[in-house]
Picture (cartoon, rainbow, N blue to C red):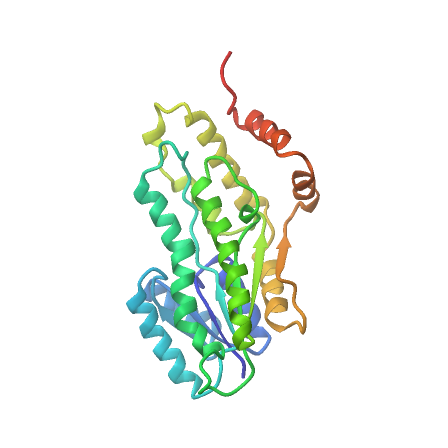
Length: 283
């Protein structure tokens, strides 16, 4: 039975990936941060699902999980690592606290580095293991190629993840381990639904406050109108199993809009976005 590790499996894309891969006959090790989520997922997914309790930024906890997975594999290789766990921290660069920017990068960039260092050997970099070489799937975003104002920390983290994945893909050729980016657009997941919980009151006296209100409303809309997370899970399955996978899969609910954005001159796109958000200087 092929085995895969998925980080951030409690809800959203991670949950959908776990369910889809289990239905396809995989054994899934899914990371969660709370015991309650571990117990819930055991009940929802059954015996072929094993919860791993760790925060991706906690190196000691990830190392302990790595030892647990190694023991369960019993000398066999891991078929896949899906680096999915992530957060979105809003705020303008001029006013976003450095600690908040640091938190964004720790979860979305340092976290995948830690998990890759821990689980990478199990994919076949460790010659003592037997079986086919596994693959790494990096859950990026369309924001990995397009900078969104007032979500600059999130965009920066996904740009960094794209660069990390490309460099890693070339490094891991030494072991025959592939690295594939999956870059969704808007998806119906709690990461956007939580926008309502984000406290932007500290920006009330900021010139960015009206635009931040619009961004929060937009994020809530993304949580309602985005792609079903199951669509992303299908893409992850393809990335893990297709004989000759692409290096990057982009999947969005409105591909034409992203195509137009990619084609238009950057200055034109700047003006469109600024007008929509009110990020234009007053006369």
